[in-house]
Image 1 (tube, helix red, strand yellow):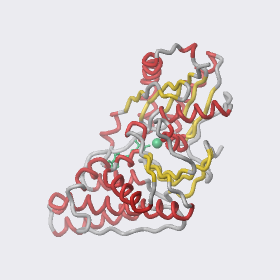
Image 2: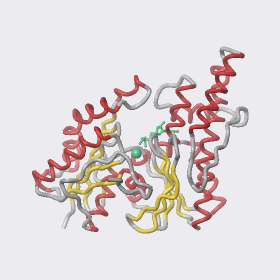
Image 3: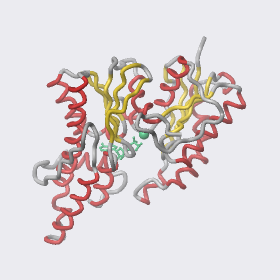
Image 4: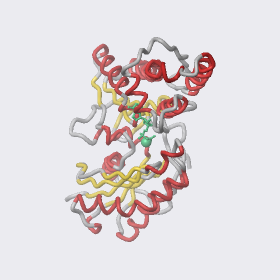
Length: 340
Ligand code: KG4
Ligand code: ZN
């Protein structure tokens, strides 16, 4: 028997759909929303409206390119949270309508667990226990996965996410949104030792990235007061120092968790996993510590429906289905569970 699942992701600013058949991803369709660029960040109301406009086309594209008719689906999966409520509501309502019309089960997926599960899309899958650092514009989490679909949140950011720190720092430096990739590029040509930023150490495996942004703000104010061209003349070194500090804080807790829990199978997920400096640091550490490392292709690191689909596949095998009363949830509880 073939198991065909349609998965929908709409938690933030990507409208995405994917079809998975017997655990093999057939496609990964994403429509990004360019409307937010002018505002320097995602505008929730605009995101919901854009999802409404795009969702039918995106789902149709996923079904058509998979060569699967809607009546051949065995289940429909959707991101229940965390995310922007208005955005989540579009995907949730669409999935519920489809499940009801087709008489097929509904599968709710936790977006943060799906980021970790993205590692199970390729043929080369991590062995368990698996430690994953998920670093995106909205989240920074260290998650331990001991068994399939069993996630333990070891630590997370107490304020800004790592990607947010990149983007806010980039904004202070006059770079366009999202600034993470630009800082990455400029940092590669800069000296990370010229400008030093504070290392904030939180208890346990938690992170904090708000202090580094404030210290950049004051550094720029001082610098510009002395020389109006300060940013322009020092941009690469500023990016290198700023990035280096974010990455060293990320790596510190990752290493600590790996040592404390004696884990050697390590992964990166989320948009910041694209950062070349972070990849280098991880590879360096892998050599030193004997880690086997996993970084999904970029399309599976950023928000996508493929990761929702793979999670839904394993939930389908477990018989873990939702009913029509499932409502979107903006944030998660301390154990990564939906908080309502
Ligand atoms: O996972 P993602 O696509 O969306 C969220 O769920 O947030 O992550 C987007 C984040 C943005 O903050 C972006 O600046 C950051 O990932 N990002 C990077 C790089 N590529 C994307 N940050 C640093 N270096 C990069 N190369
Ligand atoms: Zn995400």
